[in-house]
Length: 127
Image (cartoon, rainbow, N blue to C red; front, side, top):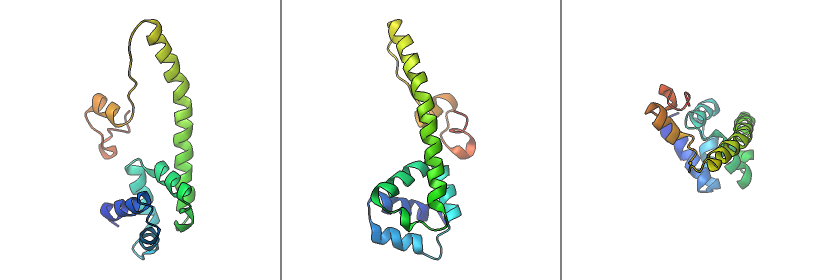
């Protein structure tokens, strides 16, 4: 299953095109493991789960894929919950010192820190 096919499935969900999404997920060539790997590689697994859940499309996912995507979403949410108090604490310190600050994370931070964003070469994974 190619990255292009995985991306098309993701786009069907974003467009809320249930007939096309149903057809793509029900295809004999659909591989839940490859789609999961794609979603993780592109850092959209949690977003994809949330989108499908909000639209009522989770029932369309085969092979326990919904549980795997949900687990990623829960991990991401937990990380965000741990980061927020630290960001708030740092922001207050900068404000007390009279300094403006912008907190950067994700792809912009990877580009600043490593010059790379691809998870395959370690760009995002190092940040």
